[in-house]
Image (cartoon, rainbow over all chains, first blue to last red; front, top):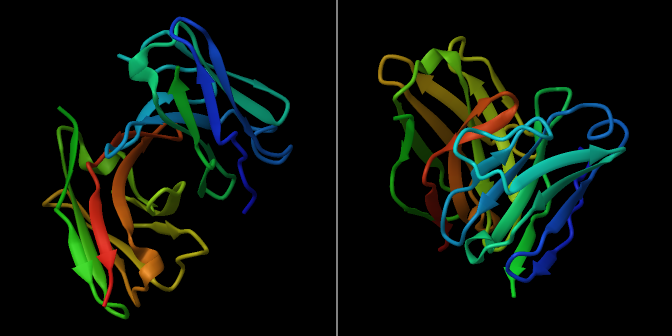
Length: 110
Length: 117
């Protein structure tokens, strides 16, 4: 199994935009639009915020957006709020119907 | 509404087995796959395996192959995960999660498992 690499931490001030990267390889992230993103607050279950790279589930704020360039998928949080302080994980569904998670990024709102 | 409800915490001795349940409601059980994902303290999420709720077909992560078994009770709409030969490194929160469009759209609240003698 390959690995998905995320930065350990990203921080920003309220109202700013931040971007979290998720880097895979040309065989996975680079070839298929099957990246999803999850928000996890301490002690809580993860919550889906982006699927298929750019799509937002119903009820998720439009301040969250996803994109991809080459082997790297990205999650952008615009208009940062205190409630956005959480861990964020990317995930990829591999060709053999197995799933792979990134290491997670801790977002701090300064 | 769509819900996945898991049982409370468990404590096991090393070498023992674990059986965690996930009760589903609010949707057609056989239309979605169900997965098990775990998270050790301070660690990344780790995918363990999934079951096709309609057919019972399963697929497991290579890491857990031979130690994990996922089953389902279609009439009760419950999915189970058994993990055998437990070691301290299996201490984690175990989540069940449903997939739609190749993403985990609904999650259980998690079952905290502690493996310790």
